[in-house]
Image (cartoon, rainbow, N blue to C red):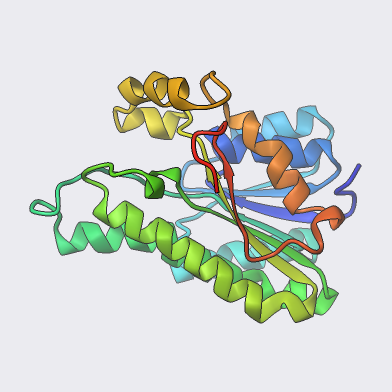
Length: 246
């Protein structure tokens, strides 16, 4: 029970990788707060099934007002938060010629601003405890010349920059900050953008030649949010089956 007495907040927890991480941390003893635009009750049922404590919150993580309400509810329910998983994101594809400024801002707000806002919201609790773990999700698409992802790639490169900056600022408080870059995984969110044709192609290029599953992220995130990772910070770790080497 590596996460006993820890409280973890996970954004994008209603399905996919966020759901898998919520259940995985609960199995390890964490009390879990899941935040999503969609009501994350399916995740709550899975967390409770493995014996975990759960609080599900509906919020737009790119809205300061929504985050303020969610933060208040989280602290009222569990008292403190020590783990933050910034997993929520969107990934529309659009050529630069057709990309409007409004869409550019929407992608950066959801994918990058939310990580900043969520960190600000729970940082005080971590500093008070002199312990914290923050994991920001980025993207392996940064390694490839994939077309139509100007806003998405900008937001995910920004997540790496934010991770490094926060690691430098927060290490003195016992808080580590790392980024995870997952393989292209056939989650509901990915499939909703019509990425099915790319899944098998990417898997065939990996050293581990199978399609990624959401649960493949659980072990890495569990390590990065445990006491065992106390000397690991500012890193971007590729969990992509050996598709890319760094």
